[in-house]
Each structure stands twice: as C-alpha cells, then as structure tokens.
Image (cartoon, rainbow, N blue to C red; front, side, top):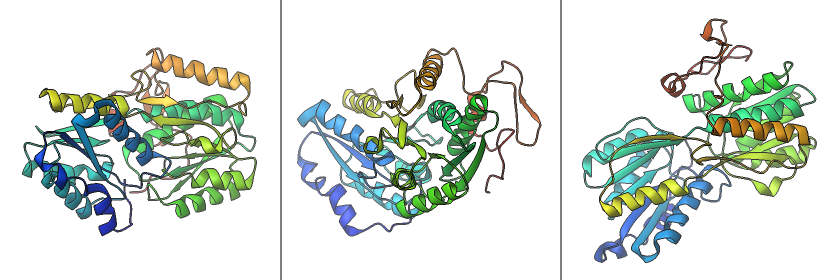
Length: 359
C-alpha cells in the first residue's frame, strides 16, 4: 500500500513511546508498521484489532507498539529500523509496499523476526502472510450482479498489483454469471487510503451510471458518497464498515488477522518461529463475510451464502473454467481451476472487462 502523507514526529512518538521503557524487562515486544491510520475503518483498523487481540491474549507477557500512516519506501525502512532498534522481537509490516524495506531491515537484524503482509519475498527471519481476498470478491460480485438495476458496477481500485487485479477479475466473473448484462467501470485511485480521492472516485462512478460500488481502498468515504447519492449499493472493504448498514453497505469482506497474530507471537515466545509463506481464505477464517443485510433479497442472500460454503468446503474455486483472457485467448478449460502461481502473478483481465491495466 502507498500513502503520500509524510511521516511526522508525532506519529513516531505515538507508536514508539513505550519501547525504550521496555528495555529492562523480559516481555516479548511485538511491533506493527501500518500504512494508514488505525481509525481508517478498513485495512489498518483490522490489523490493529489483531494487535489488540495479542495484548488481550498474552496480558503482561507481551507489549505491543505500533506506528501508523507510514508511507512506503524510505520512510518505511526508517520506521522499521527504529522499531527494531527499540527492542522489538517480532515486527509485522502490513502493506505490500513495505516488502523491500522489510527485507532490507531484516538483513541488519537477524535476531528479530519479521512478518510481511501480502508480499512474496522471504528470508530466514522473514515470513509472508496474506488472505485469499478474491474468495470474498466472488461473493460480492454475485450480490452485485443480482442487485444492479443499471447493469453498471463501479470498482475503485488502488494499485495495479496482482492482489487487486485478482479481486477485480473474481468480482466480475461472478457478477457476469449472475447477470450476463453487467459491465464494470474501473477507476484506479492510486492510493490505499485517501478519503477525498476515494469519494471523488465513487462520485465519478455514480455519475457514469453505477448503482453498485465495489472498492479495494481502505476508507469509508465511498460508503458515505453512496449514502448521499441514494440508491447505490456498497460493500465493506477489509472491515465490516457496519455504520453504513443495512444500506448502502449490504455486506463486507472482513480480514481476520487475530488468530494468525496470536499464533506467530506464541511461536516467538516458544522459540519455534520459522520462516513460512501463508495464504489463507474463508476455510481457515482469515477471510470472513460480513452480515448480508435484509436490503439484499432473501434468494440472493441464500445464493451468496451457498457460494461461501462451497468455497470454504473446497467444492468450488472462484477461478474455474471455462475462462478466457481479455484478449480472447484461452486460459482455463472447462472445469479447470487456476493454480496459485498464476493467481499470485496475475497481470491480466478476464474476457468481458473493458479498459487496460495501468503499467
């Protein structure tokens, strides 16, 4: 994730103030680097709920620290370095763009354990973890296809990385299955968290005829824009965004990091921590589907929940053929499912989507 807000001394103080005082005790120190504010109502909020779950679970045996609104790039490397210098035993870096800074800092602190969210680079003291968000996007796509009356679904995309492209494709495939007349209009916001940009994107999509808005950005601004416009369906992103239910927010994807954060902290305490790569979904509980409200017709709600259950049981994969790429070339044959390597590197749209992926 990328955020243009400059790192401030105040933000540094908030996240690290407790760390020096911990140097004399035997507590396990767990740090978090966040790309957005903990009050964003979405991505960072849910990661911080995981941090709070660590505190509740371990009590006085563990101390957590965090730094919020850290831009990707050089600022991130400085923030991670400072956290390691202040005695963190385990550091979670919770944005794709923190990948290279995490690897760089990990080389300098071989005794510190690092966990990087949504990346793919590991080291002996660096693990990666992510969630199969595309499973939730498939369910949202089905509801979107059934609920749109204009047949135009708007999608606020953040950055053209595989995670976001997977989400667009999964949502579109299932919206089109539910409603063959559906069209997607996509706006690339080039931000993870910028309420003003997200609101502008939502309003632009609504002006283009979208009566359903999906988002891969982190604030509740699109929900507010939809509420103001009236009659526009939205979905919570990363968190429940329940303040906008039962309408316009009719359901949500909830990222549940709590069990993973507790387990990895326990591994550090036990001395059993090892580098690994984790990609969990609905089955493991890392991806949850928020309440589908009564604003959704009962039949559609039942279909969405059946789809969720089939995915969780391993009976259905959201990328199941026959599927073609946007250029009309064959991708998946009848009944064939996408392999993880292709999904992790996805850089193409499926057939039926308009526009080009920015380079």
